[in-house]
Length: 489
Picture (cartoon, rainbow, N blue to C red):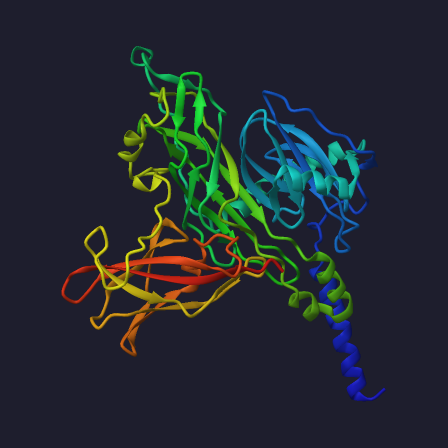
């Protein structure tokens, strides 16, 4: 055999060996025999004192011969093989979910009486009920632990639980403090309404989030999607602004590994200005491209395996999520529509604060360029020639957006304050400005605009409202329109 052919053969062999090493494998000493027994579908019934947890592992070529043992802290929940699922009842509260592959960990908080669906593989992510049920129908096989699995689980807990805790502690996560429920002594409860523990509150996401664009520790804005009421009246008004935090963000990686995105909502400001402590943790992951990654690793070795990137985790503005009150709380609820709005507006600042932005979105002014707006500002004409395209699965967006403003005087402190007819939670400030023709051209970060845009505009232009001051110190209002599209491929 020629030296060249020998080198090629050795290179191919090396890539094949490395490809095998990249396939998920259990730690040293992991049982090689398949654990658990497959059977027909089974479903649990929700219990008022426990959380019902479904664990789902979809079919994959890589790692198919290995079994995952799943735990909540030191409690054995069940076993999963490729293309199977199981369920367990777990005490409410904070838990560390982990598997015998100890780098697969996730810190969660569960609420009694609720049902959760977790996608388990090289990460652990929550699924909504529709997606969870669809995956159960896809995998079909229900796993029951075998006779010897309990003994195996006990050994794994003794030998690996501390390692799993260490792995979780090493992750880059933002500190989000748990807010304790407010304690109201009985003598002060007259005229107040009782909000029981685990009361559900529906929130609407106000911005797009993506594991490639959003950063750990970043503020994520929601608002209350509908009035929340108890027997005594409305304790939380629709439209109240709610602050969340991106607790942990990891972009998608090679080998088909999906991105992950965790958002925590620790508290909301109630209608009377008091703080409602909440259990709110949104755990998301992208679609893992395991089939393509497996095929590439077999055909092209490690290079082909690494070339396939998983999907980013993302949510689009307008999606709704549920959070729950952490404990029993007493609130001075509104007895009739509209009461208490002013109180909520005074509660600005702190976690979950509400302010004047809690009111319905205000459409941009339509004053004619060159005139004065109702607020006394000069009105300038703007133009946005660059369309914005967002591809959430790939985590790509138009990088920069330019907006031209017709003004002889240089605009100062130019910022975008409203998009699509509503005041955005945080203004978008320009990155640079330069003279352009008879006006000025400002450059903005594309993602900082796209994060607040909503899907559904199609090819129509989205109104953009900007504010700033001119060189003479006079404030101005400028209006433009930008084309925004979302590509789901």
